[in-house]
Length: 184
Image (tube, rainbow, N blue to C red; front, side):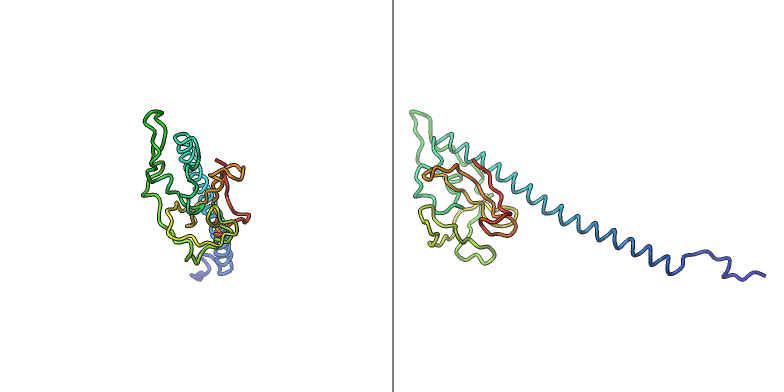
């Protein structure tokens, strides 16, 4: 009579360990590629939002014939009140002036830049503040997918540079390699 153990078929412990090891390696590769996919999707979301903001600023320019009528009203490069709040510049005769809002106010938030602990805003100050020493507090901003405000530069065209929108990227620091910038 044959032994019942010799007729049983199954896997050895070594075979099971090899299969489990292969599954762990495949799962690890999947998790690593997921991390890259997430950062790619955040980068794409930043670019899409920046394009929408660029179009809003262009519509504002078309209506006003200038990017900023009064640069003294812009409290910081992150301030976008000019796109959401009525400007008293409508000219009935020429049918020119503010026709906004150019973006929904509900898509913006107040942001206390002076007390931000997560991000460094060194080098970012009032437009007329060359050394960026004045604090920026509670301004109306649009936050990017990384949680920091988009910055609008050279809207007053006083420096001769083309106007631009900047996202500080995942690291939250201005003027680093991961910044995303588009010209308006």
